Image 1 (cartoon, rainbow, N blue to C red):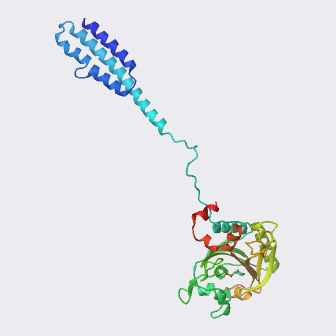
Image 2 (image 1 turned 180 degrees about the vertical axis):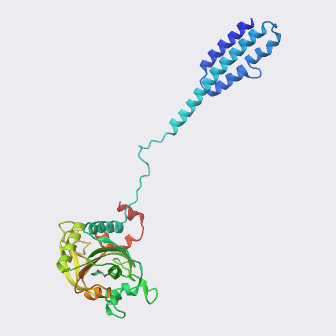
Image 3 (image 1 turned 30 degrees about the vertical axis):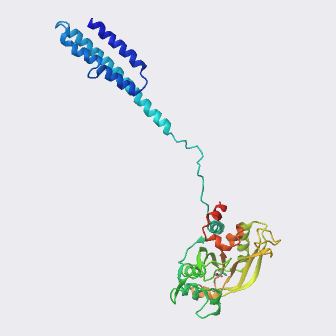
Length: 340
Ligand code: DAH
């Protein structure tokens, strides 16, 4: 009799187990079978009343059923746990191909962009890039550039002095003497960097940027300078650009020139960017004054050179049709977004 009851318990439990669909139900079934007052537990307790000769057989059957049910339950348990984990992983899956909601990107600042462009052009023409200190001595900024103390041409630049002999460099030309002292001709260098002057209006900022160029070799002439600048300008502004050279004065070059290009916005017709003139003044340049070569220990009978100095802020303003230099320094997000 007990044997049949046990068999029925086994079959019923197996059937019930098949219908179980989650871990909660499985736990309930476990308690129903193996709990303190569970079905199988009740049978084990009932063993007391089983005649001694039947005990081993019934005991063996109970053990067998227990083992079978336990195995089946733990199999199911494993299945549910795996399923739970997979469901969780599925839910947490990140679709890396989905476009992001916040796709705001930074942009390269117009000054950095024009500096990079000019560096690329000059490097492709054989120039090496050098740097110099922004806190400079009066000697390199002025004296070695043929601008002695009390020379009237110092008035061309309203300089921030730190002490009598130290200042914030007012021109990247200050690197010229530093490099000439270090190097043996022939050499071709450019120096991009920050420069400082006490001036501020819609086209001037107390901090601004220049790119200096210097070439020293034998038999350097004005023709070399004009060719080099024509190539650089055309690469920067486009092949159709018209370039104009005007005589000028700088203490460190003789002769000196200023270089204008046709306005890239209106191509010479006249617009607000070029103030109706059609041409834009872009840089100073010239044949290195032999005195400047000699001051830095270069034999001016054997060697000559040319130099040029770009205003990078102005170039950035022209290339991006910006009419006030303050936009370059305000960090106004609305302005910077337009540069993207
Ligand atoms: N240093 C000059 C300035 O800041 C620009 C300049 C003019 C640089 C002529 C040069 C040059 O190298 O040859 O106004």
